[in-house]
Length: 447
Image 1 (cartoon, helix red, strand yellow):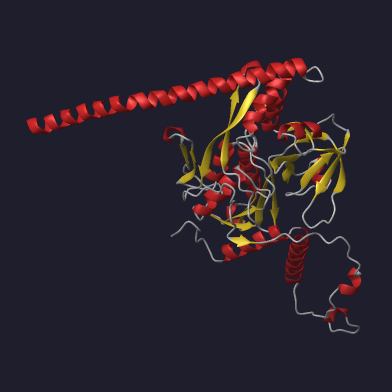
Image 2: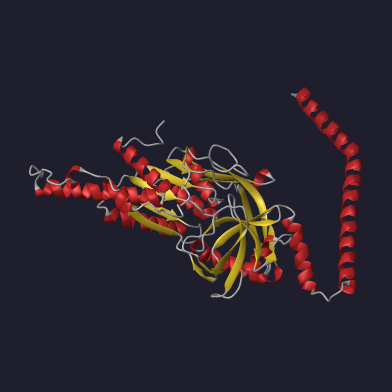
C-alpha cells in the first residue's frame, strides 16, 4: 500500500513540475492573444471616430454601432444576427402567431434573399411565391450586398400597401416581378380536416399555438369520424413549414411517440448539450402516420420528421427538406435589443445531423407543376360506358341500398381523383395510409 501511495504522490509531483514548465509559454501565448484583441478593438475605435468625423454625411452613432454588431454576427452564419429593439419586439409578436408582413420565411444565400417557404393563406402564398425562389430586388432596388435584416426591412411596410418583388426562379429564363399587398398575418398553426378516412393535420409553423391546435384538431376529427377505429391514420403535412420553437417540435413529436429520444442538441462544450425524450401516450393510438415534407420544410419541421422517421413511427414522403440543423438562442440585451446566436446543432434520435443535408424521404414523391392551360374539352375526354349507349339494358338486380353504396363509393373515388389533380403528394400519402390500414394493426415501431 505504501508503494502505491508513493507512486501516486510521485505522479502528482511530476504533474506539478510539468505544469510549471508549460505555464510560462501558455501564459505568454494568452497574453499575446489578449494584446491582439485589444489592438483590434483600438482599430475599431479609430475607424469609428474617423467615420464620425470624416464621412461625407453625418451618421447616427447608434445605427453605426448596431451595423457593426450585426456585421460581426452575420459573418458567423446566416442565422445569427442582431435584433434592434423594434426587430426584437416583432420577433416576440411573430412567435405568438400574429404579425404584419408578406408571409414568407427567408434566408440568405450568396448575397441574395432566398425564400424558405411561403406561409399558408398569406399574401405571398396568394401571389404565387414558391419555396426556393430568390428575391433579387424590392420595388426596383437590389438587395445584393444587404444583410438579411436589411433586406427584410425593405419588405416591411404599412398594411395594405403594395410591394413589387423581383423573383428569380429555377426553370424560368428571366427574372419577373410579383406584386404583393402587405397584410396582417394571422397564422393558424394547425389546420385539421378529414380526406376520405385519413385525418390531415396541416402544420404551417411552430409557434406557441402549434401543439394545442394539433391536439384539439386531431381529437375533433376523430370524434367526427365516430372514433379512432373509423380512420385509416394521420397525415402530418409539414410542407413549406419554416420551423419555429424547439419545444413545440418536441411536443408534436411526443404526440405520436410513447418513449425514446426525440432530439438532442450539442454545443461547443459537452455541458451545453441537451436531450429531449418522449413521454407515454400516443394521440393516434398506434394508427399509421405519414409525414409530408419538401424543400420548404426546415428546422423544427425536420426535427419532427427525423424523430418519427428514426423511430419508424411514420413513413416520410415528398422531397428532401431544407437542411437547417442548427439551434439559435435569443439573448436579451440592454435597451430592449436582442442577439440571435447559433449555439448548438441538433441531432435526430439515430445521432445524425441534417445540417446542409436535410431529411431524405423514405419515398420520394415530386409535386407536379400545375398545368397552366388545358385546352382539351372535358366532355371529349369523358370515358364512354355501356350505360351511355342508346338502348342499353338496365340493371334491375340491385337493391336501393346496393345502388346507394355504389354511388357513395364512386363519389369517394371521384373525390380522390380530384385530390390527385390538386395535390398529388397528399393523395399519395392518403393512399399509403389506406394500404397500411388494410394490413391490420401492425405498428411501424415493431422490430
